[in-house]
Length: 178
Ligand SMILES: *[C@@H]1O[C@H](CO)[C@@H](O)[C@H](O)[C@H]1NC(C)=O
Image (tube, rainbow, N blue to C red; front, side):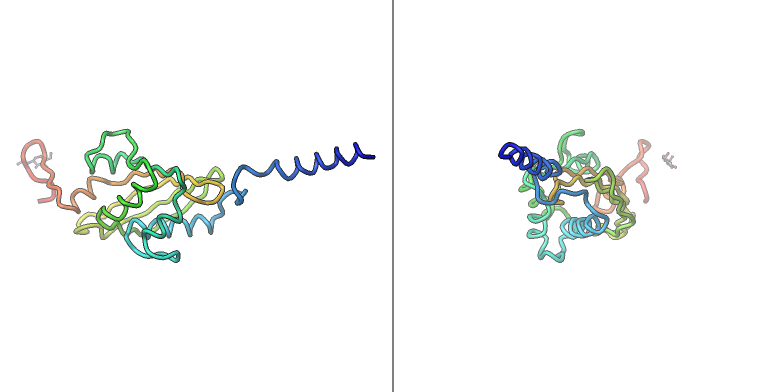
């Protein structure tokens, strides 16, 4: 009888342990959780408050400890080596996100894929001078607690550059858009 209970309790603890992978969330991100996360992330990069509070408080709440970001569009605008991480730590992201020009976006679509990945399509018609609408795509990777671990994004950095005071010349010396 004793061994029977031992086996039963071993099975019970296996059944409890199996679906867990570290966090208390234990499920794929839902469509509504993804939309809330995107709205909060968008508020942070726009320098606006979210339902969680100001942009710094929001950034602290939504980014996981090992947060990082990769974007060659942003690397090129910022003069960073192509292929390198754009932001390597959560702390740097909080700082950079509030020291870059505010980046207001309008969400065009949010798709959940592969359990913990969120694709966000957006347009920014009023970035900087607003002369050129900027479009882009983010891929947000989340952990079991729906916090951001890695963000990959690319956008029309040519448009963003023109909106923020870069002057671009053709090889023949004619100025783009003049
Ligand atoms: C310079 O090159 C651009 C791009 O090819 C072209 O649109 C423009 O007409 C050229 N300007 C002159 C003065 O040739």
